[in-house]
View 1: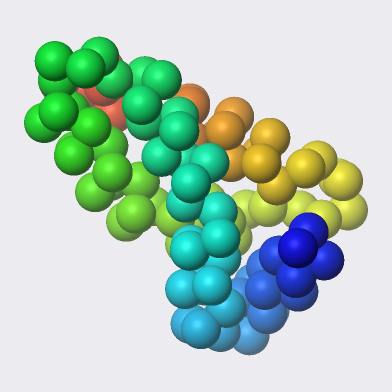
View 2: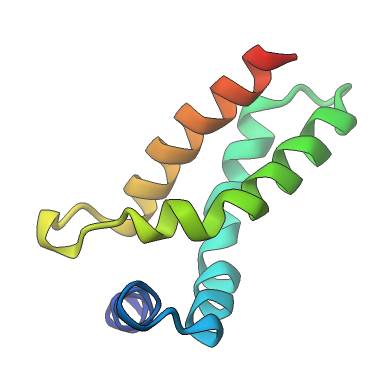
Length: 93
């Protein structure tokens, strides 16, 4: 699966392949969803919805910043990047 993810990332980054982006979002979103659940308290479902919406909107930008040559696992990259982004979003409110 990791090899397929790297192929999709390369296709998206170099060719703007929309189908590759959709495949990436589908494969990677569970990592982001888990992070949302960790960051948001159970009694704040509206905050989770907001993070979900903003996270989806930001996904192309974030995945576009991934660098394969760094050899950081994609899951670690997504968790770290989205954690930073979501903390900024939550501070804005």
